[in-house]
Amino acid sequence: MLVLFTDFGLSGPYVGQMKAVLQQQAPAVPVIDLFADAPHCNPRASAYLLPAYIDEFPEDSVFLCVVDPGVGSSRRPVVVRAHGQWFVGPDNGLLTVLARRASEVTCWAINWQPAQLSASFHGRDLFAPVAAMLARNELPPGEGIELSSLAHFNDWPEELAEVIYMDRFANVMTGLRAVAVSSDSILEVAEKQILHARTFSDVAVGEAFWYENSSGLVEIAVNQGRAAEVFDLSIGSPVKVVGV
Image (tube, helix red, strand yellow):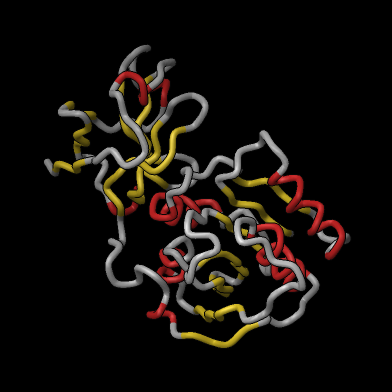
């Protein structure tokens, strides 16, 4: 499978243009839209979101990952082989967290360029063709690099105690994996404390709680309410874990 993870949104031509490249260059490979609304121009938040959503995809899936506010700059384009899957995208931290968590990982700096390369749309002109190559079982077009050379390898934490995503129900995902947080812990957001519950129906309508979401992240919700609005949260809002 080819899997799209971008901050492009679904309005406008950008996702469609990338899909057109994939269809032309790897027509037999299905394309799955995972996220088109990854945190806008925010590789850091996106880097903690992406690893939570890769397990449903089969081995050798190719993830085309574009959250790239530095497009056209000196930042490297890279390929990462981790968790038995391929990841193509900018070396701005977006792929660093999932690579760092893998038991076996190999990284390449892409040295291939198309005949025409827009300075502002590497997703279409560079990353999509490379993803298509990998989907056709070709070798990564680049030179091997050390895992530790990936951007933000040493300065981003293993667990990110911040808001990283809000879904259409205004539920709030954090960069904390639930396995790293005791269910007895209290979360503090916007100077308010939130207790753990297993699921929505375990609390009263209108009550806030935190829980392990279906992808293993700590998520804040309000039963039949909108947590992001109740607590006035946005991407990057801090989350504090209080042990009991």
